[in-house]
Length: 460
Image 1: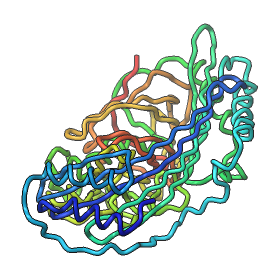
Image 2 (image 1 turned 45 degrees about the vertical axis):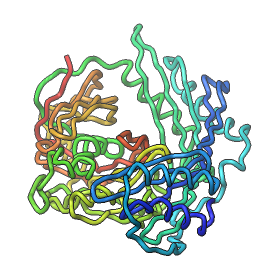
Image 3 (image 1 turned 30 degrees about the vertical axis):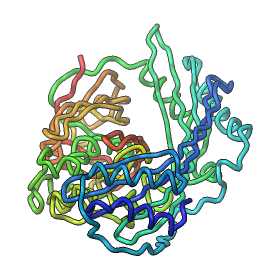
Image 4 (image 1 turned 180 degrees about the horizontal axis):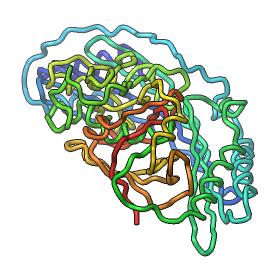
């Protein structure tokens, strides 16, 4: 993308005024999407993102400059702007760039850009048609097929010169069902760090549409959820969004380094129930949130965040690591060159436990079974959260009973993870896009079926 000798000259210009670290992050990415309404293509979009950022540190000061001109002249202007903004001083660094080949644990067989839009549309149409055919109450289906070809280069004064190609594919269907004048929506959005081979046996487009329609039909016929404090069983897969939002963000150095986290200063302390082991792992082959190395060039790794209730690690990027006096954990991520990177999650999940799913449900005399979680909000400083339950059911006498809508879960992350007292064996993951100060990035959330012994359920 940018020759190594050019990167060396640009970095030397960046540190000319005394910076003690400098990096170049360059990208050339193609985003392609097809949207279908019903069974007809509505839009086809191609979006190219190309440019570079030069970032310099001096102690706890960080300055970043960006450019769309990735010629040597353009990069030099960018580097000199960053150096000038840092102030005056003499160069203090001597370095040589060495190319790093970290390997690729996510091989792609069918590059999406080589597959015709007509073939992609046919896959999406199969999914939408399956949703529309599921039940007469399904009134509408909207689908999107997205593929991203994200090419990046990282060079820094620690001697790293590395490139990576990140290809991801995702299909998403949203279905609307109507019963007795009431409409409800269901959705299903699986994705992988893979090419179009994702549809050759791993993900069935028709099954995606059916699942979206099933949710919509069930919830369209549901009554409202009663409010109160009660035990709640949260299903596996996307149910992990509770940990991701209510606890995961509070374990990122973005918050911890500034003591703006409910878990700051608690390494080695017991913060969760003994049954809770939580992991962030960017090395899972083909997983939606996986990376070969982070956006500062640190090789990806598996991190145990919480082990049997004890806080073992934070997620740390290079700059916030300086403030904390700790090394990077390969957690630096950014949406694009236009965003300053910071600590973020990859594939974050509660590890499988030993409790039988049937026993988890049977243990609840009266409560809520949250089969599918939705969106919500959280304050990482306090850990207070509010999440919608997209598909919920009342549990009576240890049996899953009627569906209910309008449910929400309200609580505080540091309290909830202490109340997770049963953890199933069937860990699974769901895909999402996580927003933070460094933009929107692909992340996996996951868990087995879990029981929270007591939580506030919002409803009517």
